[in-house]
Image 1: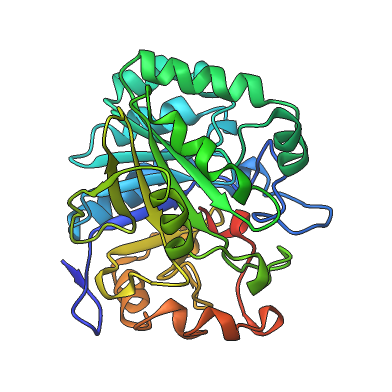
Image 2: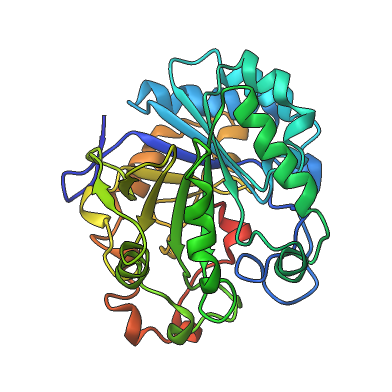
Length: 325
């Protein structure tokens, strides 16, 4: 069992398997020419499995595959197949574009739920946000997942002046679709043009939704990052991830491995320990894992407290795409 200095048990690993992506969302990657890791520098399917197995031995019961976009890896099917042999719950966060290529592999791996990032329901705005013209294909794949009884959670990063006018449109999706909408506050990362004026707090979003819909609170599990609500008369549900305005650090159970094999104990933390180099040398990586957990700060990577006082240029971190979502 992995515990930090604040007695938080860590049993959830978020594993980035690539820093590459087929979209170019500005809140995720810097506004500059990006270079991505070559395939040979990424963890192989065997390394991903063997490292995951060590984490499972230490008490991890859930692993989420992230990126970049995890489905751009040509060996994604092999990765998911190997991980399905472990006694864990497997999660995936994807932009949805390539899901149709892997539906059979997802079903064989018993994936019952999938997180899909979608920040707009407008095809032209989708093109502006992602710099790609693929809204129709993503929406088609969302429907395919539901047809295959894979529960869909839509992650919407809400940014003032960009897509906050679509919050009600997203909630309306839950009327007839068994879909879960997750509204996520806009977070600061390296060179993603963040500023506090673009943040719409979840408290305001909840108030806006409550004016038009009758909500009722759903039960949140101990380590949930989102606060869930049902809507009377609706098939689907909604939730709010208030990372900045009402952080959930006190119950954090998450660890991260970046695509280049560095272990991070917090999304906002600057501390990174080189896991993959030690593993490839045949060294015992358990002391590195435990050291990373020991270094974890009590809140928000120890870099800020109130988001309204953040100076983005003072934060020491990577871009989201280099960390893993």
